[in-house]
Figure 1 (cartoon, rainbow, N blue to C red):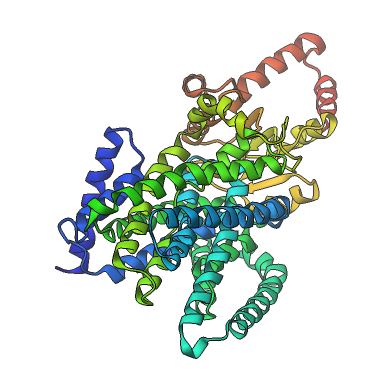
Figure 2: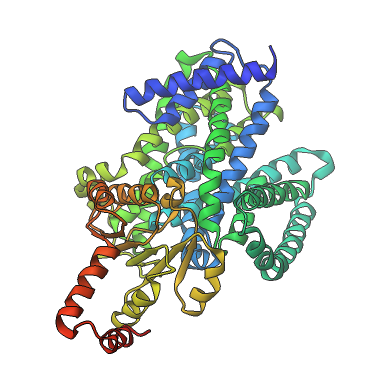
Length: 552
């Protein structure tokens, strides 16, 4: 079987499994993992070129983390960095201790119990980021904190894996030189990246922004290129891709880049879940069932409870704590790597590796439901969550948020009037336009500028519309305006939507799509002129006075 045919068969099975999940109103990720089980050794054993699929899944992981980095500007890192560090380290400590005691109680040896405890500690960055992105919650407070502590976990996991490998290898029995070299490489790379970020990227970004195709190619090359450079230096692909995204997060094109890369990310990340499912083994399941159920229950319930208590002690509201806690209700791909390493080194038996793998399958599937339906679960569990409040909090600690109330789509002809409105009444404005040359002007006005194509639904999903009260569009394309109305109806139904149109037929279509008010410039202008003639007559002086009154 050729690789092309094999990949096609895998995608067909993924499509069938995903369609079945959609009909059953289940998360599609469960379908992807199920497809992996079907094409793996347990099923029809379709996957022969596993190395190639693993390479594709790594590309998906790199693109996913690059997109996440685009939402993590230095401002956001400063905002939630301390909270993420505290929650990440505290959760690792508490979960590992409790997990170790549970593993000992299940009859595992001390060494195996520590491996299991550490495996239960780390949550899947890939699964959580995919679900949070799909829900459009990367801009939310709990989304930012979750992303932050997941990255802290990844760093800790990397150090643990390096440490186990170093102590188990006679040629690397001293961990300090290894860690020191890693730190020096990281610092050197950060210096180079800072210089690139300050001097090179601003000049390049303006050049590439003039061409959509060049913007796509450059962004992909930048993200994957930095990920490859980090791997070559002995660091993590994931961290490299994330840093690449953070470096571009302050450019005008961040939202547009993320929108363009999301379909590519979805394709490759599907293969990550297929590979994960194809790795599952179900031998000796009967006598392993009890440990799997106990440990899975601890991850699905115990981990969120630990995080909720930590967040409460830091002063966060129970809703934010609950949403953040659910994001760690699964084990990570690092856990599976750790189990494989333990087996290779002779520290773990195949049964223990199977237990960790099955806990991974159960918790990834289970946490998918918890994260996707978290808003529906919270009201039902609110009273129970009050029992976990060690300190009463009325609201979350104050943090700076992107609180844009008025969005202007297409700004050439209307922006000056609304900029005056914003300054006079203190409204926060956001400008959305497809012309990169407009950026410098609005930066001087200290107005947030978003570069992107409104006709791209993925781009609209990237915009911070959580606090929008008024959206005004003077975009001339009717299809784009209809898409904008429909999108706002879904994500921000309380927002007022004003659209400029050319004809009455267009106005009717826009009202049907959800517009609050449609402005017909020619009709409004004609009515205004008729009123002026009624007051001042037909004299040239009268029209000159009208022109001066409008500021021309």
